[in-house]
Image (cartoon, rainbow, N blue to C red; front, side, top):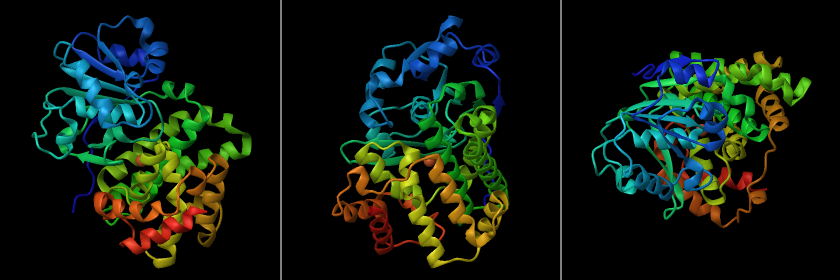
Length: 373
Ligand SMILES: [Fe+2]
């Protein structure tokens, strides 16, 4: 059984300037990023690379129309030897697609009709502490016509280098910090409960949980500003969680959050959080022993409580970091839950097969109903 995939080389720099110098950013590079990232950190460096601002092509999570519009612009530029993605999950996922030889139509690419071949070197630099996408081989894209998200996972899509730069996190607004770090925590928990978890993935997953939960405790004790000296830890924790789920996979929380994120444009971390407790409660009801009990011991040791109270204590802590809303509060109608269940069962088996206990349609629908109000 596969134990751990470690593909990109990992780098860390204190500042964006150090990164730009060490990686000799310039001619032949296509930088995919956001203006609010590029301008303050790279603008004054006068780099001669081509730059695409993702937000000019649409807001929110990546979708097929956004990528098609970006491809049209890139095809008007001269050939690039390297793609450098600097941003949150959206930017990093899109950048993976731009390192491929055949790009469009994107819908066919995700159906694997043109062969998936890489033709440019790929460097990924996360600017949030959640995605983990810098060390995985998956790009998730929403297909607007199909109203859900699909993942394209292929080993050719690993970055050649992943670069952690804590400086980027200093400007992260609190809601983005909260949602993205909870996403990283969900990666750590889901990958540790996955049937594909190994001692190696759990080493990274458990450590990520410890770093994130300890950071949250600091923040609830001393206020949200207490995160600032811990930003490097949060960035490393999200990278650890990325290494864990890159091999062991995420599960039902991610699968069940996609219809919510896709339909109501809820940020990825927040939509995960909306279903996280419902899924964990269901697992505990169905199979309270095994890995979920081992994990409870660990969370209990981090939060100074006994294992029986560990999940309760964790969700109490998380509720103080990010508000957990019911599906109804997002505007979901109860009759939508059946079609969401079908979507999950038919379209998200890549994730559903990593669930801690196998879930059928009836159980998925039951979880959705519990989360409804
Ligand atoms: Fe995620």
